[in-house]
Length: 485
Image 1 (cartoon, one colour):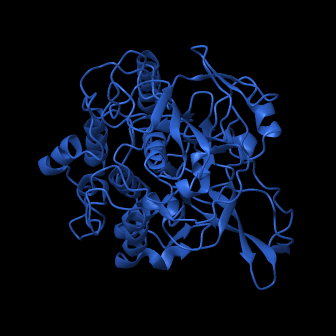
Image 2: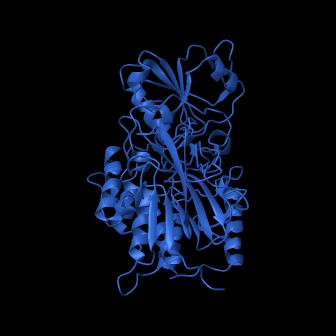
Image 3: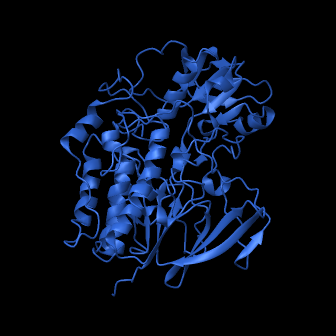
């Protein structure tokens, strides 16, 4: 079978994953057209700070992104200018005041440029870093900003991308289409908030408008002055926001925190200003009472902040035109994927960067370089049967261990194994200097990840944790060191 001739590549998203992909594809010197489509006004992805998070919208307990973030209706004729869409698109970010990174910058940053400082930098540092990365690599020439990819459809031997941009002068949405040989999806997964279903919650949301929110819409403790607050979740954002509120001096104490399980940051008793509660059993929309599964209840809560994570959203993916979905929300995994990166249906025409979080920016780099090498024609993937076998074995392993398909562990060496596969697959760049070299992960960097901690971990090593909010490990097992990312 002849290799497809990939000459044009569309990258969706200009966050850290898009920045890594743009640099990797540009370095191959094999593509005539590279474009990076970003719906925001600047690169930066989830690290862009929006002072106004917009009113909480789309809070639909138990619903997945296809229900909460559906695609727009595509115009029949293109190009065209239409009345602007008013549909919520979840384009605001979840960055809140006081947020810092939680991975040491020496191992979080992309390999050829370090953050301005660290080890845990305030949110504006990674935003500026991503912007500067595009500029320093001169890949900012590929940026197509303020442009939303509304549809990705397979047409013959190419991808048709339907695009939308708001024209602020004419006050219209401008729609048009472009075709590309290959697409790299790097749009992140911190856009559409997820709230688990709880008996009575939907009616409670209707009965008490504004009382229930999600960490995506949280900005500052000052917005909760004199309120009694319940935080749900104890992963990174749950821990962070609980501590902010408790130490703010403006909210009514204690701050209640509902936890499914203990995390490594927890001691044997709650910190000052915090009261722990178990998981919620039900909401009473008539009285406003919140009942917990130990039989206790809270009757006077003014604000409930769900810190229960996000699910990836791909509203642009045209399942009908492309023969099926890109993501299986029941299984919480990409469909027809290999090594969390490659498409087994379109090996040289489609790739996804950034679904496993692991070391965030650095892991994106390994994926991006491997995809660029493949799409340029420099590498061959294993056979279709071998890739399918990997997918089946991966699903079985994660099922046995009670974790999601794309949760890659650090402590047992699984992260290094994944990086090593991508590293060896990409190999060295050409002798002529084409292509990027996949980065090494030095002893110093690995030591920093193992020993430099944002918070003290009094419970580390005790093995007394249950399943985390996002299913990091099965009940009764200790969470992996990377569980919080």
